[in-house]
Image (cartoon, rainbow over all chains, first blue to last red; front, side, top):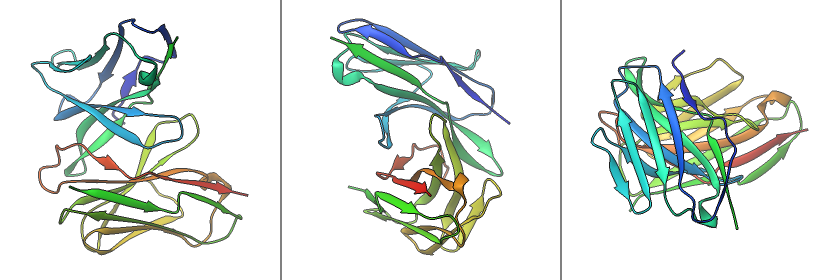
Length: 112
Length: 114
């Protein structure tokens, strides 16, 4: 079975810190990539898509390296509200269509 | 804009009882629809997906079933629940077509089996 592997965490960082999450995927035919955020006992919410050229959304920067099958998420100037579990998600071909495969997530706690 | 509704939010059921969870999507047509389960401390597991009315694909063998009686309605059912069916059930949708779009989730149903 194809896998998406993430840093096990948890990451405990002070407010204002920069934190990086890494993720690797095993299916080289994967087509699209995402980072989702999941708060405790809530549904996952799309944080951002990840493109080969790298993309930025405010304090968040995502990078994709297709050759290494590696995805990253950088959060700058961490806020208390960034505390959540971050899921690396890969859209890979399965049974004639594309399905999302989710990593188990990395928990982030931003401490005052 | 598109919205997804899932209910109930919380459910406590005895072993052996039936189950019916419902999910509806508004603001789009012919979406791809999904049911996931997330057990405590584990990742999301895809249970079923549907690309159209009456079309259901199952990812894992289990005592659950799914149906799509209307374009924007997706139902998860069981005739007899097991203890192992406890978990957080999530419905999701994405635009139909090539399948490279992200998915968007409902609020989830937290199911406890006693």
